[in-house]
Amino acid sequence: MFCFTAWGQWVILCRVWLPLTGRLPWNTVAFLEYAYHRGVLRQSGAVYQFRHFRLQEHLNQHYRKR
Image: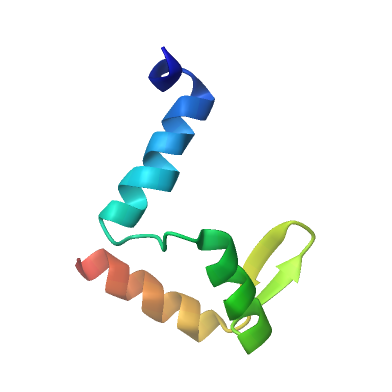
């Protein structure tokens, strides 16, 4: 029954499936905080954003090629 709720689907997709396929780090919050402290991301409220548009475009194109 848990799998049919929105929360259950989020847990299965974001916390299990994406890390297993290598599309998301296992500890996502630690990864985002590390990138923020390294200057790659900036934080605007509760949202992280790329600091450099060219980096965002590069990652976007690399992901599309997969």
